[in-house]
Image (tube, rainbow, N blue to C red):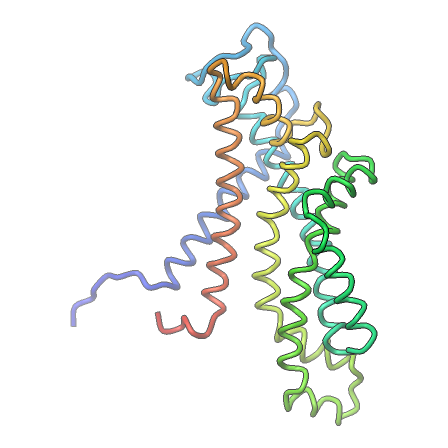
Length: 277
């Protein structure tokens, strides 16, 4: 029997995940280890178009756009990791508690979810960031406090489906409390869905950090952030300095799409229905 050589879905999915993780890891490590001199001011080389000396060109202060974009994107990744970690942990705790204990706890969690989702997302982000003093602290707090409701609903829905299953009832009969049963039997069951939800939080966190920074309510202007770079580039777009917005915007879009690829790929891997593909 001849081998068709066809790559199955599992192999392609793992290749996509590996490529996405490699790109994001390189950007992250390169950015956090980059010295300030790499994207320092050099007025003699300002507004140079892309070339061998400066692949992404330079800005109005002569700063190399490649190094500045990498540093800015790595800052966005750090904020996304912190915010998504805090937000997803809160979502897991709130979703499990609401479904397991029910009653007033469930009503309170649903009320908080409706409250957060009832306010326009960008406005809520700006308000929280402004109240927290903006900067890295303000942006991280804003993203963390506004991205848990949807994941909470997903976790709660999953727990509601299994809380009355036979093995959970057996745990109660064996003397396990609701908290013990949730930790030992319910949380492991919802982890695959939760993991996918956590991964898909990252692109939202990155985009929203860039958005509020672009509008002037996030990271300060002296910070090499993607939102700051895109905001500054708007002054030069009409004069033909296209590279000031194109390359940072492309790197941001690539990072967001790669996180989405990782999340969707994990969803296919963890879905029993795709096991035969």
